[in-house]
Image 1 (cartoon, rainbow, N blue to C red):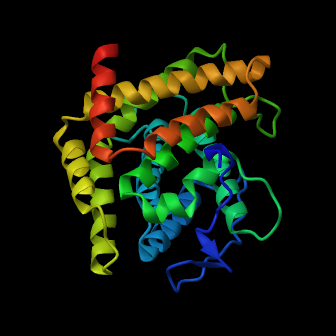
Image 2: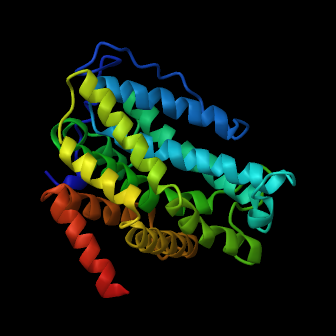
Image 3: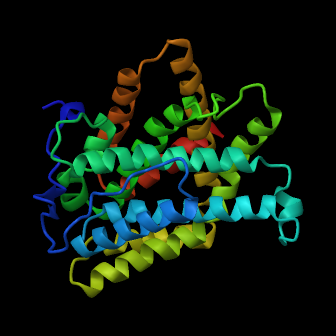
Length: 295
């Protein structure tokens, strides 16, 4: 079977995780009026449920929660003149950060809730792979995390940047210098959270270990150490910068009709297919070498 046509979405069966007794509530309804705090609380609920199930999608959610908290922090720093870091972030666009974070979550929850639903709806192929039971239960934990990250950033982000708010104004304004600066600052701002991401994924690992569901613990500990030590910061910054630039380019291509959503999905699936083969350690070394050669 072509990897882009994978159909096994057995992350859940009959409203329950296939290997856990906890039922899943699929009644979450995204709305542009939801605060980022409300969205984060839903992510935290899902992260806890995936930890109970012992699957690797929990690691993706751990990363996602950190990025959402970072967005909340930045918005507070920009809007509150008494905030200790207001001067540092005052020139960034808080509304752009809020809009991207909010609509970003819409694409994730849309795919996730469709996976839980019994209705006949088509899920974007990158999310089919990221939520596939083989990805979240059979592969090493960090593979599952990376599959979710690639699906969310490489596929969802260009679509988010294309979105138009209820006011009729596009989320990303190509002619707005403040938008450009804010968008390009995001990579550096997220890198600052790497130690927090490390603590989160290690906490998820400890939660699974406590329930006897842990596997691939050495890989998680290795990545946790690299993220905390700062040894990985330069590499991650370059990767994030390249990914964000590519997302912006693909947004432009979509806008101009040069690239279709289907072609974007195929591109993401190919990258995700590469992640599913070989050990996580080999993939880390490949990433390090590719980054060094491009620098």
